[in-house]
Structure formats: C-alpha cells, structure tokens
Image 1: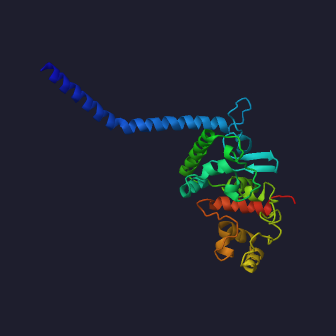
Image 2 (image 1 turned 45 degrees about the horizontal axis):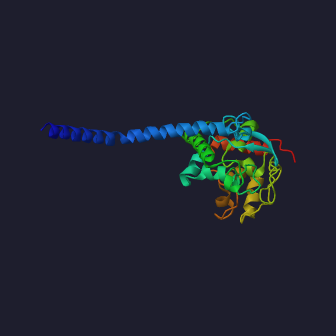
Image 3 (image 1 turned 90 degrees about the horizontal axis):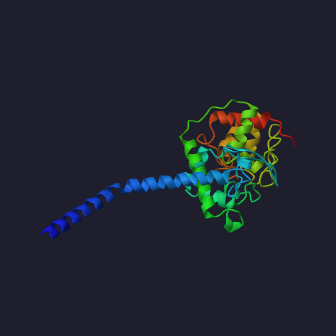
Length: 273
C-alpha cells in the first residue's frame, strides 16, 4: 500500500512538474533569446569598434564613426562619407528584405548602390573578406538594433542651411555620397558628376530620361522645384515610370525639411570641380 501511495505521489509530482515546466517554457525561451541577443550586441560592438588592441575589432567605426552615426574616411577610392547606420530607411529595407543588413555586410556597398567600386567592402570569408559567420551575425544584430531604434524616433526638423544639407547628403539612406561621392564628382558615366548642379542641369546621365525637354524647362523655371521632383521620384516625374537608376526618396525616407536643406546644399554649396 505504501509503495502504491508513493508511486501515486511521485507520478503526481512529475505531472505537476511537467505542467509547470510547460507553462513556464515560453518565459525561459524568451529569457535565453534575450541573453543571446545581449551577447551578440556586445560582440557586435567589439567588432564595430576601431580598436587595434582588440583582434576581434574589424574597425567599422573608422568610417561610420564610433557611434555609427556616419563619418568621413580616407580610402583607396579617396575621401568617402560613410552613412549614418541609425536610419529608419534601413528599417524599411528590412521590412522588404529581412536579410538586407546581413547581405550588405557580407557583400559590400554594391548591394545598396549597384556600384561595384563602392568604398564599402565585402566582409564575408566566402568572398575573401575577414569576418566569419558569427562575427557577421553579431554586426547584423547591432546594426538592426540601431535601425529599429531610429524607426521609433520622431523625425527631426533640420535647418535649411548648406551645413545641414551636407549632413543629409551623407546620412540619408541610400547615401547620395555612396554614388556621387563626398565631393559630388561621382564616377561617370554610371554615377554622374553633379558638382555643377547649381550652375546648369546635368544631362549626361546613364539612362537618358524620356522627358528631358520637361526637365530642362523645369530647371530653367525653378531649379529647386526641379530637384525636388527629381529627388523624390525621377522615374515617375521624368521617365514615364521607368527606372532612371536614381533611387526615389519619398517623405518617409527624406522629410520636407531634410529635402529643402539637401537642395540648398546642392545649389549653394561649394563643391569644387
């Protein structure tokens, strides 16, 4: 009798334990996932940092800045402006392609701009880069966390100045500088030189727009309005909906105040050339 009672008690205890374990399993899974993400974020910060004393550091901060908000760097292609990685635009890209950040890190800036000579290199071992799968995953988690934070922030108004426009030029994603260069000289014919956009319409384009006459008329009437049309949607406004190779920048990517400042920079800034 005692053995039967003991057996019943043991069975009951195991049943209670099983139910309790099952009920609390989601919480444990969540806690493990959060711990793993924290560890990946910490590792991602190590890799991102420009720290010669740390063998794990890849030095992404040399171009993108210590906090990932963008910066200027000297590369084999000359001076480049690395984009701000705290960008809601990256979050939008992730909605369309959850692997977007991972692919850019793996294969480089060509994923963003189509420019095979992009200053952003490929980092994956599989294409000759220095980073393994775990390192790339850690960087991916880090950049995606920044993008998610940026998506939750309210858009900030920027002053309509050349200086503010210069910041927009390098920080918007995809960055204008990634194609046209920090000095606006581009890499013709694929990426036009736009240093003289404040003096005359740039017509030497890789894809001749079908409505070039309208472009010329709009530029002559009001260069600012032309640039607004071109930057917002060059394909829809001047090429019958066909791609011009120029990405569109709707208001959820580039606010009105950012667009105004960018145009001021393009028209009034000193660009050399």
